[in-house]
Image 1 (cartoon, rainbow, N blue to C red):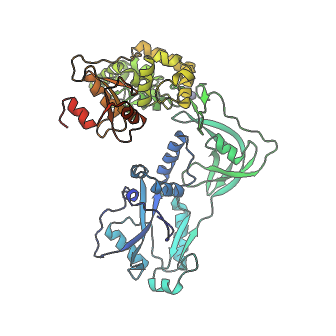
Image 2 (tube, rainbow, N blue to C red):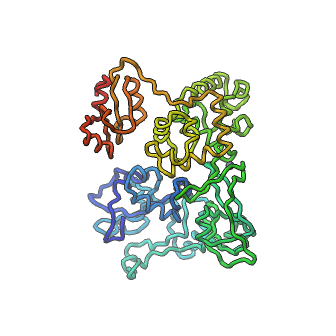
Image 3 (spheres, protein in one colour):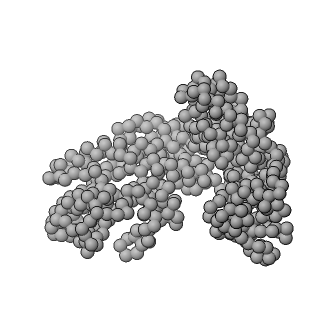
Length: 529
Ligand SMILES: [Zn+2]
């Protein structure tokens, strides 16, 4: 990717794009294909939503997002962004191989490249204009955004005659559509609560027609965006609509008089729970795990694999449980009865009984899982494990102040603040109480088998092991009678180091403690490597 002179090698990332063939059928010994990487609207919206959750800034448009995605350092990140590739040119020795552009597009398609099917060979300018008009309407239905159509002279001989200006060919032009913008007044700004608890400010507009559609709402994304735009209630703004993406406010056209600044509410408009904006985050969110706006997402997280492991509690079922009012808190899961489940769609007696059994079994999940299940921001599996080790019980964690919480490994001020905020919300305190009554494990017990091959030995895990998650390695060691400690000391017998091992490995070398890899650990456990 580059400007023709300088660029970056993005081959490894490009290989992950599914529509880019890794093998081509061709008689040509060497050839060059030029094209474009495209991100569709849905992937774009999902990427931006994900970035907001992580406290990162949004990409301004799909084009920037696609360019950013092909340049990221890790191929798996590129792969996750579901990019598409359209081929536009087939060249041999830098020149078109066919007599017409149309033929070369057909050849590219034959070779297995993705070529845009929405193309037409027009005989004259009239036909071009007709095609352009047709897509002015139909572009709404495309899964990606376009701002016009590209018109090219088909004959390569004529292309050569026309030549190039300093910047661009004279035989191709972008025939653009007018930007779908309009001016209107912001009558109010309210907030919407999303599935993850994020509060999104929404501008209520005096209804206005933009490109054939009446628009009365536009997203303002977050507080920073409102500040950047400098928009207040009463102002006249320019809004823009692109495809089926929610319209957005582009800029303030003129100040209203009177005008009134928007304030993010301090309590959730849906449930009244506390609204928190964490340090370094752009989004404000409701931290009540049982907030109706968040509930479905909270339940899915609670039940998911690696958390409470409640098999059979999928999206379709959660929808029914919440919509029928059977579950209005994750704690309600533990009060479900067979009679509640039987009337549900696609729910036989057998699967209902099985689900209840799985819910019952989830009560045996250890404290780190319970902590993860609560959905405290920044507290994942790993942090939960460190917290459980450092404090020993859920109550000790809930009662600890921000300072004390940081005694746990890898818990910094931001994570500590989030934990403290969570347990100070009365609705969450009530949830914790109900989960206690349901019989979930609130104490951290490490059960070691007596007489196992690793009895009496203390291990420290560091870095990424090739074949085991940290949790799995820990379970294997503990099941064999060994102990896993969080930090390296003179009492440590072995440090199990994987890739990118950090300070713990250095400490082990310093203290002269034996360092082993995963294969050696497996051998100690009596497994064949
Ligand atoms: Zn709420």
